[in-house]
Amino acid sequence: MNGEELREALRHEMEAVVPPPPLDTAAALGSARRARTRRRTGWACAGSAAVVLAVAGIAVVGTEGAGGMGPTAFGARPLPGPSGEGTAEPWPTGPDGRPQEDRTAKAGNRYDQGVKLLDDLVAVVPAGYVVPENPPNATVDDDPPRSTQAEFEEKVNGVEVWRYTSLATITKDERTGRVAVEVYTRGNKLPTEPCELTREFWKMEGQCQVVTVGNTEIGVVVYPTTDRRFEQWAAYRHPDGAVTFVAQSRSFGGPKSGLEELPFTVPQLAALAMDGRFHLQ
Image 1 (cartoon, rainbow, N blue to C red):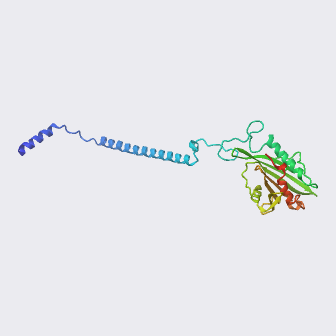
Image 2: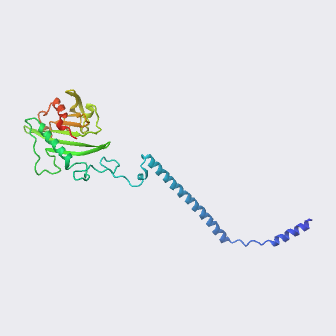
Image 3: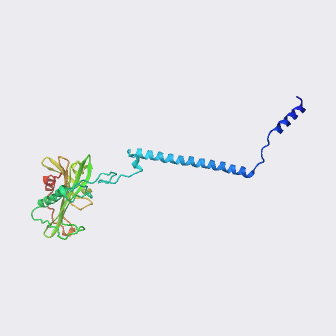
């Protein structure tokens, strides 16, 4: 085939092909816009998926790092319980068979033990001192001469730890002081070393000495440092783990009207910490 024949054959082939429609500018722009919209939507969906996966990843890390709390870490939060921690455990059961409203026992065996503790404290006050009775019309805001309270402290290894606190104002020759007894039942996490234990009373610091009663060493703070709510106090851990604190102060209500001397000597205060009447369950 020569050149002329080749050109003639190509011309016939071109004439046989259907020509494309003329370019529609509006249609072309619409198609381009739709393509761009699809691309943006695709990126947005991909970004949303990434965010969801990232949050899910954080949630998994958070729940696993929170001691295996599982879905509750970002769902229903456990309510505060008796010890203020994240637990739904109710307050101890009262004598009516229902949980207490708060830490303080207002009836039942715990309440009765607190009342008895106050009576026993009054009973050991030396002769010559008077413990005034509470006025009949005293209000809740008053600081009565006699007070006692039984409070749930915490639960340790399934054992309820209770704290009993009794205080009594004592007077002599128109001067006023105060004595106190505080008992923690067994299971408490208080320290064992005598002076370290003694300084746990109301977290007060002071000069401590170890006093031997029989074969037992008792820690006694003989002089406070900064906190002077009490001048002397002793502590004893009973064989079953219960702890008793006994405290005394010359002044209550103002140093000018305070007692001329403390009601107990240091050895007497140490012996009182071991007194069986102040050993509660």
